[in-house]
Amino acid sequence: MRKGFTLIELMVVILIIGILAAIAIPRYVGITKKAQAARVVSDYQTILLAAKSCLAETGEYPPDRGPGSIPNELKPYLPDGFTFNLQSEMGFRYDWDNWVIDGRPKHRFTGIMYGISVTTSDMALISAIEEIYKGAFQYSLGRNYTFVIEFIPEDGEI
Image (cartoon, rainbow, N blue to C red):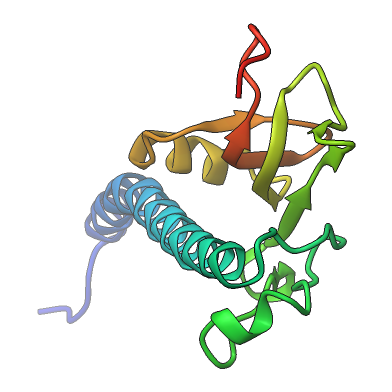
């Protein structure tokens, strides 16, 4: 009597493992994207609360900063260790947008005055955010997608 497996048995096992992997890996990636999207939406709520607190105390929103940089005026209202630059670990950065010039939107075609942008090239992440977040979220420029805090509608009324 020989010990071991036949070639057919090994091929069947490899086929079964391949089928299971073909099912499990896409599900894992989808779950990971949904978790990242939930993190983005949670971070947005944190930044929004900080911005509204800054507005309530100082009478104005913080000035614009570049992607990945927290405006100094916003730092006291954010939790310790909070960062806008998650590029290396999660593939995206936040950007506080203050697009106001003389009380009007800098980019008139969007109407956005204040927002929080997510800069990423990961379209699956953006799709996952759009699935779970039902607020004002829109494509803006380049690879930026913006959670809108305040905007001027097309009729011009604030």
